[in-house]
Amino acid sequence: MNSLYVSLAIAALVIFVIAKTAVVVPQQNAFVVERFGKFSRILKAGFHILVPFMERIAYKHTLKEQAVDIAEQVCITRDNVQVGVDGVLYMQVLDPGRASYGIGDYMFAISQLAQTTLRSEIGKIELDRTFEERGTINSNVVDELDKASDPWGVKVMRYEIKNINPPQDVLGAMEKQMRAEREKRAVILNSEGDRDAKINKAEGEKQRVIKESEAAKQQQINEAEGEAAAILAVATATADGLRQVAAALVDDGGHEAMQLRVAQQYIDEFGNLAKSGNTLVVPANLADISSMIALATNIAKDVPRKSPSGA
Image: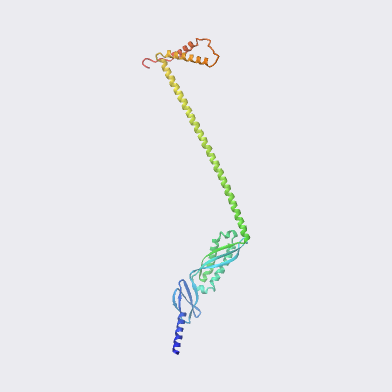
């Protein structure tokens, strides 16, 4: 029986020793091993055996990128306005040895340093610029933290401001200012639109007047050309008629026909004169008909007759 108890005790001791000496390191993790309280080595992912009662796991670090919430703090801007600012910090352990022995608690140290650096950066700019200068503030904070955390074996990847909370009275003043700016822009846009509308209307009226004047000009030109063509046509027809009359006078019997035509027209016009009123004016010399016929005959005589050959 005693031997059985001894065997069980030895088995329990072996299991305990194996449990204390066999170590499995997960992926993206690193364990720091100390021998007799002094740094020995760093265990990476995989299975490892420690020397019993001599070595132990002193620190365990994750090599993944970690997100650290930076609590809200009160910062004073360059124009002496208090604002509450919080953020989030992203960092990664690159050297587990320095992260273990370079500083007591690198997480706490970096978060405190982030707060102090952020207060310093906010104090350099005015309140109105804090919202538009977030990228610059984030970049400056990362640069300062990266320099400070390098001896600790920690790499600060980036920093992002989450919220900037000014006091309520400042928020009210900013809201009034933004409302005034929007109203100002609205008035400017309305005035510019009214100005453009008037300019477009004036330009349209100008184009209309120009088009109407050009149309009137073209109409006058067309009418003048039409009248000129009509006058030319009448003159041409009259000239052709006169030439035909002249040609008829030089032909045989032309003089007698001319005398008959003149006498006939004289009588017709004299008769029309008698019809136009109750009063009739009788020529003092009724021989006027003969004198008119003689005058026409003398004019016709001045026109040379055609030769028989048509020359």
